[in-house]
Amino acid sequence: MAKELIIMPNWLGDCTLALSVIHRKITMQRAGVSILVHPPLVPLCSLLGGLPVIPYKRKSWAEYRDTLVRVKKEGFDTVYVLPPSFSSGLFSYLTRIKKRRGITSDGRSYLLTQALPRALRDTSRHLTYEYALVLETDFVPPEYWQGVKVDKPEKYGGRIVFCPGSKYGPAKRWGGFPALAELLPEREIVILGDSGDGEAAEAIESVAPERVKNLCGATSLVEAARIISSAKVVVANDSGLMHLAGYVGTPVVGIFGSTSSAWTRPLGSKVRVAHAKTGCSPCFKRSCKHRHYNCLAQITPDSIAALVHQLVPERS
Image (cartoon, rainbow, N blue to C red; front, side, top):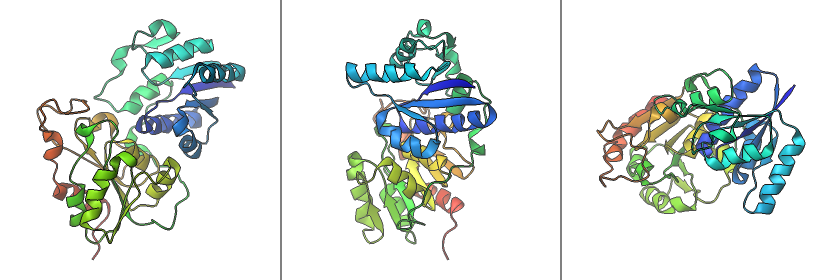
């Protein structure tokens, strides 16, 4: 049986999308697959993927060397490089694994033995299409994903989860969550995110403190995955938590500003996406060069509430 190593993306959202393609690959092909994962994502990938995980430690030369030594000892036949960065291509080269396959980018084509054309990174197609090409497996449209089961905590079961943050930048952060909370008076809400989302979470909490639980900065990714899996529906900006919701099979409303739902819509069939058709979107910028953020401002709380009610009918 071939032994394959997959260098995973560092971003949570891209990582979960990649896991969905890997899951399908191993069900269709006989291969021993291990994944090289950014350390903060290791516990979550261990929970979601069920695969051997090697932490991609590289904060110091000693850590980098130790990671290389561990990879070399495994005797892999192939390394698939999913991130487009030069550093990931260089790491694959230093492993001396015979077959090194990835997209040509950042001047790294000579580091790979199978360098695929840069044009394959096409934002008009879902990102999992690119990952399937790199991983040499069939592409399955994201809406066919069925989700994976994780343990669900009873404490927060049946609530709506709001994810108002996005590490990428303000061009992906919709500001209508407080108004949305007011439009859903029959629902208890949990807010998830990191400590940097505290201001946005407090604004939501202030409109309905009796039915909003703010957990921003208070959960690990594993805990967040379990809370999301128990939710009725998740409303999230285009972010890692949005993709985590799709991966575990929770109904999700994804809000897109500067990015494209054609490229990174959530996984699964129980999905609704919101994006305004403006002349400048998608621009894929972290912040709006025009400073008007029309792609987000034109998405109304009423429209998002309607999408929520499509997925979860309003209580009588």
